[in-house]
Length: 85
Image (cartoon, rainbow, N blue to C red; front, side):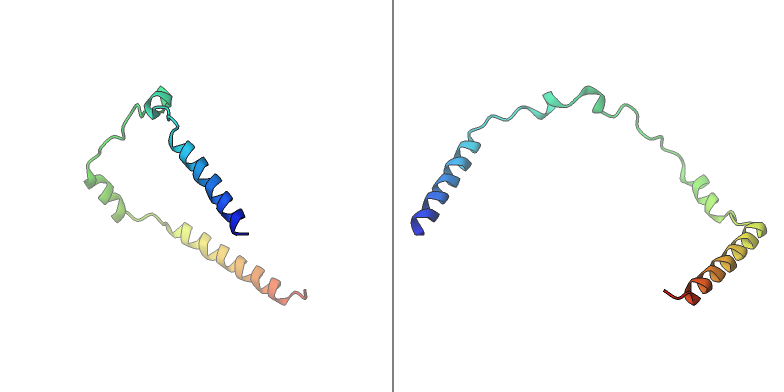
């Protein structure tokens, strides 16, 4: 049993040693040219972005539609709870 483990460790050491002698290709040479970024994001002033935060997004119609959807989902949940499985 000890001999088996020793031979396996020896084979593993031989394979690891041979793998360390391999010449690897240059990464720059294998990368395609189109992988390089061609355009960068445009830098914009932050003030207009911050002004959009203060602007209200929801309208009264949105609130009514949301309340109707919530009521429908509650009805559906109650029907599913009442079902026998």
